[in-house]
Length: 497
Image (cartoon, rainbow, N blue to C red; front, top):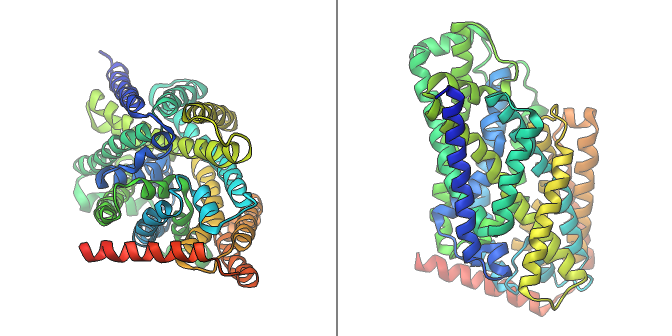
């Protein structure tokens, strides 16, 4: 068998496994709660790794190594900001969101939670939240499809558009039928594959580059500043922008929905430890892959055309073709786990928060599950059209969507969980203005070049939400009772631990 045949065999086995998991989840999905939230029955390991895999996407194995390969550790500020943000998200948001969403009318989506929590009779906050999710997740799903196209083009010489379509069809297939359970189970397996691949590539690569000493010398001969977090290219605004990626976690629906689905609040602590451990080691692996790759090409001559493919190229150099194929499957795992997670949340927003709220309020669960599957299909088609351009930058697309969610939902979620006086008018004002500021700022190359758009969007949302809420606050006994019940349940869970 040729090298490509071995690698394709590994990819085919991986994809068949994803489809089988999707079929298993399909058989376990009986109602809308199952389809959208997996019946709130996820264990800590599945919750942690599925959240991590959904979070990192192709950026972890392509975007980040490409940036480190090109510019050095000055690009690692994003990884530092993400690690801190993820830990804070698990610590402050996960336990309280798990309890509060169940207390507040068993909310199964973020928009429905905000609607129930704030007693919004107009349904505006639910509808606007759904629109924000639809717009930004369509861009986000598109970034995953761009990663898929680049993956098949670089690895097998396939046409970019063919690769994009293969990834789209398989991912949409198991998401459309298996729903949230399929997404979570496949994400768990994909998280394991990503983790192992990211540890193996730089570890084995060190043997080819002569160990730590020779590797470091080779990298510094290319660029003496490559290991400098505060290199000359670094600016205060640039570091702030990179670290500010961590702010985005509080508002990422495809990540925090995992907190709502975990079996119980007491398991969030164990899930946090698993998730953050996975994340730190995976990020070190991604950075190590870029550094070892740079040293390898310095020692052996040559270079790569697209730095974002350094993980793919090193996997092919270091391993037997079949093992290299499994390494390549890690790329697909990263891409597909994020696409599927975003698709199911977008489907939830369209059905539960827009279609159900505006049109069909008394239809059967079977009807809503069908509508959810149709929504997955429609969003996928639009995302594929947006990603049809092969010159789209993965990091730019991800950064744009990440900032939009962080600015729109981050402050709103935090205030909803921790501040009694948040009002529906305050939340809606902050959310809309935050999203608009992030969108406009991100479209202006001069402004976004100075400061990442999540910073002004997040800050303005937070300030406006507080000011408008103070101006419009009226005590609501139902809201107060739910807030107190949430605190009491959290307190009782802590006492049990």
